[in-house]
Image (cartoon, rainbow, N blue to C red):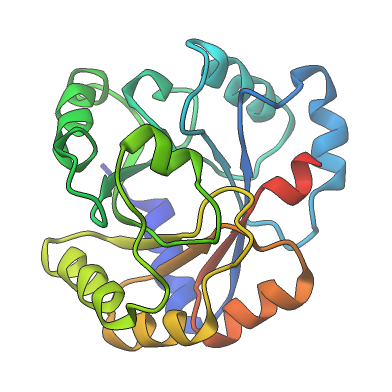
Length: 231
């Protein structure tokens, strides 16, 4: 398999070209308004992520198919569980929830997905996923039954991210949770980025241009925005 998507992440990171992904939650996305949604995307959008903590069965495939018909922007799955995997997307963030200790989201969902992925054309990108406290209980916390890492525990966050890199993860994703009150602090982003040799994704609670630029300046290679566009 070629790794066009991941190679583009690496290339952008080396060139300090900042990437922007808009996250679509299939449960709240209206497929009849797909073209309206696409017209409203920021011009600097480089990727569309599709997924949610809990999604009605079959909805992800419908949403991905409709978006795919109307744009050439790469679509990556950001699934909460194996039921959200569809071959209609371009790639899959193969997430392992490294911040938690629930085996269901560390490895069991991943094992369940293999039968779907074995003959799939999806580009599978292993991603170390860290849930960071964003000031409110997130859907990820409720579903995964794991606690987020406090933003005060910077060294723990750094060490967990670095452990993901040592394990062979190709991306690290720091997530404050959908609609977070407090985005991940710039000092955390900088501390993690300084330790990594792989691209860093930052998401959760980023609602303004200033917050987005602060994340970029601190070292984020890709910023994910979602709730602000749902509203």
